[in-house]
Amino acid sequence: MNAVEPRDLAVLYRIASLASRELDVPSAERAVLSEIMSVIPADSGSLSLLNPHTGYLEISTEQGLPPSTGEFALKLGQGITGWVTLHGKPLLVPDVAADPRYIAARSQVTCEIAAPLMAQGQPIGVINLDSNQAGTYSEADLCRLVRFADEASRTLQRLWQLERLRGESTQLETLVNLGHSLVARLEEGDLLATLTRSGRELFGARLCTLHSHQGSARTLTLQAWSAIEGFEPATLRRDPPAEAESMLVTALRSNRVIEFQSLDAGGAHGAADLPVDRALRSALAATVLVEGKPTGVLAVYTPHPHRFSDAEKRLLAALASFAAVALHNSRLYTRVFKTEDTLRK
Image 1 (cartoon, helix red, strand yellow):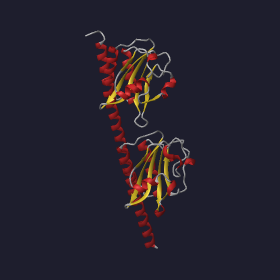
Image 2 (tube, rainbow, N blue to C red; image 1 turned 30 degrees about the vertical axis):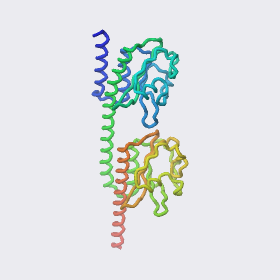
Image 3 (spheres, rainbow, N blue to C red; image 1 turned 90 degrees about the horizontal axis):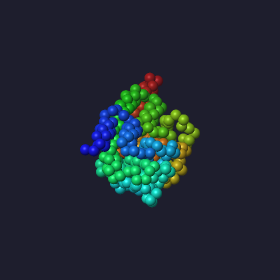
Image 4 (tube, rainbow, N blue to C red; image 1 turned 90 degrees about the vertical axis):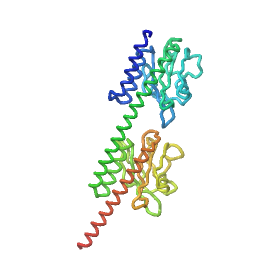
Protein backbone atom coordinates (compact mmCIF):
# COMPACT_ATOMS: atom_id res chain seq x y z
CA MET A 1 0.00 0.00 0.00
CA ASN A 2 1.55 3.29 -1.02
CA ALA A 3 1.31 6.53 0.97
CA VAL A 4 -1.53 7.95 -1.11
CA GLU A 5 -4.07 5.17 -0.68
CA PRO A 6 -5.05 5.86 2.97
CA ARG A 7 -5.83 9.48 2.05
CA ASP A 8 -7.92 8.31 -0.89
CA LEU A 9 -9.84 5.89 1.31
CA ALA A 10 -10.56 8.68 3.76
CA VAL A 11 -11.89 10.87 0.94
CA LEU A 12 -14.07 8.02 -0.36
CA TYR A 13 -15.48 7.53 3.13
CA ARG A 14 -16.24 11.23 3.56
CA ILE A 15 -17.94 11.40 0.16
CA ALA A 16 -20.08 8.35 1.00
CA SER A 17 -21.01 9.82 4.41
CA LEU A 18 -22.48 12.94 2.79
CA ALA A 19 -25.66 10.98 2.09
CA SER A 20 -26.37 10.66 5.83
CA ARG A 21 -25.62 14.24 6.86
CA GLU A 22 -28.96 15.89 6.00
CA LEU A 23 -27.27 18.01 3.32
CA ASP A 24 -29.06 19.54 0.38
CA VAL A 25 -27.78 18.50 -3.05
CA PRO A 26 -25.89 21.75 -3.89
CA SER A 27 -24.01 21.59 -0.57
CA ALA A 28 -23.14 17.94 -1.19
CA GLU A 29 -21.87 18.76 -4.69
CA ARG A 30 -19.60 21.46 -3.28
CA ALA A 31 -18.34 19.08 -0.61
CA VAL A 32 -17.59 16.36 -3.18
CA LEU A 33 -15.52 18.67 -5.35
CA SER A 34 -13.69 20.10 -2.34
CA GLU A 35 -12.80 16.61 -1.06
CA ILE A 36 -11.43 15.53 -4.43
CA MET A 37 -9.39 18.69 -4.91
CA SER A 38 -7.89 18.21 -1.44
CA VAL A 39 -6.02 15.08 -2.61
CA ILE A 40 -5.57 15.63 -6.35
CA PRO A 41 -3.78 18.95 -6.99
CA ALA A 42 -5.71 21.31 -9.24
CA ASP A 43 -5.76 25.03 -10.00
CA SER A 44 -9.44 24.79 -10.87
CA GLY A 45 -12.15 22.17 -10.95
CA SER A 46 -15.83 21.71 -11.63
CA LEU A 47 -18.73 19.30 -11.20
CA SER A 48 -21.14 19.54 -14.12
CA LEU A 49 -24.49 17.81 -14.64
CA LEU A 50 -26.53 17.06 -17.72
CA ASN A 51 -29.73 19.13 -17.67
CA PRO A 52 -32.52 16.66 -18.61
CA HIS A 53 -34.76 19.49 -19.78
CA THR A 54 -32.32 21.24 -22.14
CA GLY A 55 -29.82 18.48 -22.93
CA TYR A 56 -26.91 20.79 -22.06
CA LEU A 57 -24.04 20.05 -19.70
CA GLU A 58 -24.12 22.76 -17.03
CA ILE A 59 -21.68 23.56 -14.22
CA SER A 60 -23.30 22.85 -10.84
CA THR A 61 -20.33 23.82 -8.69
CA GLU A 62 -16.77 24.94 -9.31
CA GLN A 63 -13.56 26.10 -7.66
CA GLY A 64 -11.02 28.44 -9.21
CA LEU A 65 -12.98 29.32 -12.36
CA PRO A 66 -13.83 32.91 -13.37
CA PRO A 67 -17.24 34.18 -12.11
CA SER A 68 -18.59 34.32 -15.67
CA THR A 69 -18.09 30.57 -16.03
CA GLY A 70 -21.25 29.90 -14.03
CA GLU A 71 -23.32 30.25 -17.21
CA PHE A 72 -20.99 27.97 -19.17
CA ALA A 73 -23.06 25.24 -20.88
CA LEU A 74 -21.95 22.67 -23.44
CA LYS A 75 -23.75 20.38 -25.82
CA LEU A 76 -23.08 16.67 -25.51
CA GLY A 77 -19.77 15.90 -27.18
CA GLN A 78 -18.63 19.53 -27.05
CA GLY A 79 -15.36 20.22 -25.24
CA ILE A 80 -13.48 17.79 -23.01
CA THR A 81 -16.26 17.50 -20.43
CA GLY A 82 -18.92 17.18 -23.13
CA TRP A 83 -16.94 14.35 -24.78
CA VAL A 84 -16.54 12.53 -21.45
CA THR A 85 -20.28 12.84 -20.71
CA LEU A 86 -21.30 11.71 -24.20
CA HIS A 87 -19.08 8.61 -24.18
CA GLY A 88 -19.17 7.86 -20.44
CA LYS A 89 -15.38 7.43 -20.44
CA PRO A 90 -12.66 9.19 -18.42
CA LEU A 91 -10.10 11.28 -20.26
CA LEU A 92 -6.57 12.54 -19.59
CA VAL A 93 -5.37 15.49 -21.68
CA PRO A 94 -1.66 16.16 -20.91
CA ASP A 95 -1.60 19.27 -23.10
CA VAL A 96 -4.93 20.93 -23.89
CA ALA A 97 -3.36 23.08 -26.62
CA ALA A 98 -2.79 19.91 -28.65
CA ASP A 99 -6.37 18.63 -28.27
CA PRO A 100 -8.91 20.07 -30.75
CA ARG A 101 -11.80 19.14 -28.43
CA TYR A 102 -10.67 21.58 -25.76
CA ILE A 103 -12.79 24.70 -25.07
CA ALA A 104 -11.18 27.17 -22.69
CA ALA A 105 -13.05 28.18 -19.56
CA ARG A 106 -9.83 29.61 -18.08
CA SER A 107 -6.92 30.75 -20.22
CA GLN A 108 -4.10 29.44 -17.97
CA VAL A 109 -5.17 25.77 -18.17
CA THR A 110 -2.63 23.47 -19.80
CA CYS A 111 -3.49 20.00 -18.41
CA GLU A 112 -6.86 18.42 -17.65
CA ILE A 113 -8.45 15.20 -16.39
CA ALA A 114 -12.16 14.38 -16.36
CA ALA A 115 -14.27 11.42 -15.17
CA PRO A 116 -17.98 10.78 -15.82
CA LEU A 117 -20.71 10.64 -13.21
CA MET A 118 -22.89 7.60 -13.96
CA ALA A 119 -26.44 6.60 -12.99
CA GLN A 120 -27.83 3.18 -13.96
CA GLY A 121 -25.14 2.81 -16.58
CA GLN A 122 -25.85 6.20 -18.18
CA PRO A 123 -23.61 9.30 -17.91
CA ILE A 124 -25.30 12.17 -16.08
CA GLY A 125 -22.38 14.53 -15.60
CA VAL A 126 -18.64 14.89 -15.14
CA ILE A 127 -16.00 15.91 -12.61
CA ASN A 128 -13.19 17.89 -14.16
CA LEU A 129 -9.80 19.04 -12.78
CA ASP A 130 -7.46 21.56 -14.42
CA SER A 131 -3.78 22.38 -13.90
CA ASN A 132 -1.71 25.33 -15.08
CA GLN A 133 1.30 23.07 -15.71
CA ALA A 134 1.50 20.67 -18.66
CA GLY A 135 1.86 17.00 -17.77
CA THR A 136 0.66 17.45 -14.18
CA TYR A 137 -1.63 14.43 -14.27
CA SER A 138 -0.86 10.76 -14.88
CA GLU A 139 -2.96 7.71 -15.65
CA ALA A 140 -2.81 6.91 -11.93
CA ASP A 141 -4.41 10.28 -11.14
CA LEU A 142 -7.12 9.57 -13.69
CA CYS A 143 -7.87 6.21 -12.05
CA ARG A 144 -8.15 7.92 -8.68
CA LEU A 145 -10.54 10.50 -10.10
CA VAL A 146 -12.69 7.70 -11.58
CA ARG A 147 -12.96 6.06 -8.14
CA PHE A 148 -13.97 9.35 -6.56
CA ALA A 149 -16.49 10.04 -9.34
CA ASP A 150 -18.06 6.59 -8.94
CA GLU A 151 -18.55 7.15 -5.21
CA ALA A 152 -19.84 10.67 -5.82
CA SER A 153 -22.38 9.28 -8.31
CA ARG A 154 -23.80 6.88 -5.75
CA THR A 155 -23.92 9.54 -3.04
CA LEU A 156 -25.61 12.13 -5.24
CA GLN A 157 -28.17 9.58 -6.45
CA ARG A 158 -29.13 8.81 -2.86
CA LEU A 159 -29.47 12.51 -2.09
CA TRP A 160 -31.55 13.11 -5.24
CA GLN A 161 -33.86 10.23 -4.27
CA LEU A 162 -34.21 11.63 -0.75
CA GLU A 163 -34.93 15.09 -2.17
CA ARG A 164 -37.55 13.63 -4.51
CA LEU A 165 -39.22 11.74 -1.64
CA ARG A 166 -39.30 14.89 0.46
CA GLY A 167 -40.86 16.77 -2.44
CA GLU A 168 -43.49 14.09 -2.95
CA SER A 169 -44.23 14.08 0.78
CA THR A 170 -44.74 17.85 0.69
CA GLN A 171 -46.98 17.52 -2.35
CA LEU A 172 -49.08 14.86 -0.65
CA GLU A 173 -49.41 17.01 2.46
CA THR A 174 -50.47 19.97 0.29
CA LEU A 175 -53.08 17.84 -1.47
CA VAL A 176 -54.51 16.60 1.84
CA ASN A 177 -54.65 20.15 3.21
CA LEU A 178 -56.21 21.31 -0.04
CA GLY A 179 -58.91 18.64 0.25
CA HIS A 180 -59.77 19.78 3.79
CA SER A 181 -59.77 23.41 2.66
CA LEU A 182 -62.07 22.76 -0.28
CA VAL A 183 -64.61 20.96 1.91
CA ALA A 184 -64.93 24.10 4.01
CA ARG A 185 -65.35 26.47 1.05
CA LEU A 186 -68.62 26.88 -0.82
CA GLU A 187 -68.06 30.15 -2.65
CA GLU A 188 -66.83 29.40 -6.15
CA GLY A 189 -64.45 32.37 -6.18
CA ASP A 190 -62.73 31.16 -2.99
CA LEU A 191 -62.51 27.64 -4.37
CA LEU A 192 -60.81 28.74 -7.58
CA ALA A 193 -58.39 31.04 -5.76
CA THR A 194 -57.40 28.19 -3.44
CA LEU A 195 -56.99 25.76 -6.34
CA THR A 196 -54.76 27.99 -8.45
CA ARG A 197 -52.62 28.99 -5.47
CA SER A 198 -52.15 25.34 -4.50
CA GLY A 199 -51.34 24.40 -8.10
CA ARG A 200 -48.64 27.05 -8.30
CA GLU A 201 -47.12 25.98 -4.98
CA LEU A 202 -47.22 22.26 -5.80
CA PHE A 203 -45.26 22.73 -9.01
CA GLY A 204 -43.06 25.63 -7.93
CA ALA A 205 -44.57 27.39 -10.93
CA ARG A 206 -44.46 31.03 -11.95
CA LEU A 207 -48.16 31.02 -12.78
CA CYS A 208 -51.24 28.82 -12.45
CA THR A 209 -54.44 29.59 -14.33
CA LEU A 210 -57.92 28.14 -14.57
CA HIS A 211 -59.93 28.85 -17.71
CA SER A 212 -63.64 28.06 -17.90
CA HIS A 213 -65.12 26.37 -20.94
CA GLN A 214 -67.92 28.25 -22.66
CA GLY A 215 -70.28 25.54 -23.92
CA SER A 216 -70.45 24.50 -27.55
CA ALA A 217 -68.40 27.50 -28.68
CA ARG A 218 -65.32 25.72 -27.27
CA THR A 219 -63.81 28.97 -26.09
CA LEU A 220 -61.88 29.45 -22.86
CA THR A 221 -62.24 32.39 -20.50
CA LEU A 222 -59.73 33.17 -17.75
CA GLN A 223 -61.58 32.62 -14.47
CA ALA A 224 -58.87 32.48 -11.79
CA TRP A 225 -55.08 32.70 -11.49
CA SER A 226 -52.22 32.74 -9.01
CA ALA A 227 -48.70 34.00 -9.70
CA ILE A 228 -45.42 34.61 -7.91
CA GLU A 229 -44.75 38.00 -6.35
CA GLY A 230 -43.80 40.56 -8.96
CA PHE A 231 -45.80 38.96 -11.76
CA GLU A 232 -47.42 41.58 -13.98
CA PRO A 233 -51.21 40.91 -14.22
CA ALA A 234 -51.40 43.05 -17.35
CA THR A 235 -49.69 40.22 -19.24
CA LEU A 236 -52.74 37.99 -18.75
CA ARG A 237 -55.04 37.73 -21.74
CA ARG A 238 -58.63 37.82 -20.54
CA ASP A 239 -60.71 37.96 -23.72
CA PRO A 240 -61.93 34.52 -24.85
CA PRO A 241 -59.81 33.54 -27.88
CA ALA A 242 -61.06 31.84 -30.98
CA GLU A 243 -60.48 28.09 -30.96
CA ALA A 244 -57.87 28.33 -33.74
CA GLU A 245 -55.86 30.85 -31.67
CA SER A 246 -55.98 28.96 -28.39
CA MET A 247 -53.16 26.84 -27.00
CA LEU A 248 -55.07 25.34 -24.06
CA VAL A 249 -58.01 24.18 -26.18
CA THR A 250 -55.75 21.23 -27.10
CA ALA A 251 -56.37 19.87 -23.62
CA LEU A 252 -60.13 20.22 -24.11
CA ARG A 253 -60.04 18.28 -27.36
CA SER A 254 -58.10 15.38 -25.90
CA ASN A 255 -59.56 15.38 -22.34
CA ARG A 256 -56.12 14.56 -20.97
CA VAL A 257 -53.00 16.22 -19.60
CA ILE A 258 -51.06 18.06 -22.31
CA GLU A 259 -47.43 19.14 -22.02
CA PHE A 260 -45.87 22.18 -23.71
CA GLN A 261 -42.12 21.69 -23.20
CA SER A 262 -41.06 24.85 -24.98
CA LEU A 263 -43.42 27.80 -25.23
CA ASP A 264 -40.96 29.46 -27.62
CA ALA A 265 -41.31 26.64 -30.13
CA GLY A 266 -44.03 26.42 -32.73
CA GLY A 267 -45.18 29.99 -32.19
CA ALA A 268 -46.76 29.21 -28.82
CA HIS A 269 -46.07 32.74 -27.60
CA GLY A 270 -48.51 33.93 -30.25
CA ALA A 271 -51.36 31.89 -28.75
CA ALA A 272 -54.25 34.13 -27.75
CA ASP A 273 -54.69 32.51 -24.31
CA LEU A 274 -50.99 32.48 -23.35
CA PRO A 275 -49.89 35.38 -21.10
CA VAL A 276 -47.56 37.88 -22.76
CA ASP A 277 -44.69 36.94 -20.45
CA ARG A 278 -41.38 35.77 -21.91
CA ALA A 279 -40.39 34.33 -18.53
CA LEU A 280 -42.89 31.48 -19.09
CA ARG A 281 -40.91 28.62 -20.62
CA SER A 282 -42.92 25.39 -20.22
CA ALA A 283 -46.52 24.55 -19.38
CA LEU A 284 -48.72 21.64 -18.34
CA ALA A 285 -52.50 21.69 -18.82
CA ALA A 286 -55.29 19.37 -17.67
CA THR A 287 -58.99 19.33 -18.49
CA VAL A 288 -61.46 19.88 -15.65
CA LEU A 289 -64.40 17.51 -16.10
CA VAL A 290 -67.64 18.06 -14.19
CA GLU A 291 -70.22 15.27 -14.58
CA GLY A 292 -68.18 13.95 -17.50
CA LYS A 293 -68.27 17.21 -19.42
CA PRO A 294 -65.25 19.50 -19.98
CA THR A 295 -65.76 22.55 -17.80
CA GLY A 296 -62.36 24.18 -18.01
CA VAL A 297 -58.59 23.83 -18.18
CA LEU A 298 -56.15 24.03 -15.27
CA ALA A 299 -52.60 25.01 -16.32
CA VAL A 300 -49.24 25.60 -14.62
CA TYR A 301 -46.36 27.54 -16.19
CA THR A 302 -42.69 27.18 -15.19
CA PRO A 303 -40.05 29.93 -15.42
CA HIS A 304 -37.48 27.54 -16.92
CA PRO A 305 -37.50 24.83 -19.59
CA HIS A 306 -38.99 21.75 -17.99
CA ARG A 307 -39.78 18.21 -19.08
CA PHE A 308 -42.71 17.12 -16.95
CA SER A 309 -42.53 13.64 -15.47
CA ASP A 310 -45.38 11.13 -15.44
CA ALA A 311 -45.72 11.76 -11.71
CA GLU A 312 -46.18 15.50 -12.33
CA LYS A 313 -48.79 14.80 -15.00
CA ARG A 314 -50.68 12.55 -12.59
CA LEU A 315 -50.43 15.25 -9.93
CA LEU A 316 -51.99 17.91 -12.16
CA ALA A 317 -54.69 15.45 -13.22
CA ALA A 318 -55.45 14.85 -9.54
CA LEU A 319 -55.59 18.59 -8.90
CA ALA A 320 -57.96 19.01 -11.86
CA SER A 321 -60.14 16.26 -10.36
CA PHE A 322 -60.15 18.16 -7.05
CA ALA A 323 -61.24 21.23 -8.99
CA ALA A 324 -64.03 19.31 -10.69
CA VAL A 325 -65.39 17.86 -7.44
CA ALA A 326 -65.15 21.20 -5.64
CA LEU A 327 -66.89 23.08 -8.45
CA HIS A 328 -69.59 20.42 -8.72
CA ASN A 329 -70.28 20.56 -4.98
CA SER A 330 -70.26 24.35 -5.00
CA ARG A 331 -72.80 24.47 -7.80
CA LEU A 332 -74.98 21.85 -6.08
CA TYR A 333 -74.99 23.91 -2.88
CA THR A 334 -75.87 27.01 -4.91
CA ARG A 335 -78.83 25.18 -6.46
CA VAL A 336 -79.97 23.96 -3.05
CA PHE A 337 -79.78 27.45 -1.58
CA LYS A 338 -81.70 28.90 -4.52
CA THR A 339 -84.36 26.16 -4.23
CA GLU A 340 -84.73 26.75 -0.50
CA ASP A 341 -85.03 30.48 -1.09
CA THR A 342 -87.69 29.90 -3.73
CA LEU A 343 -89.62 27.58 -1.40
CA ARG A 344 -89.48 30.12 1.41
CA LYS A 345 -90.85 32.80 -0.90
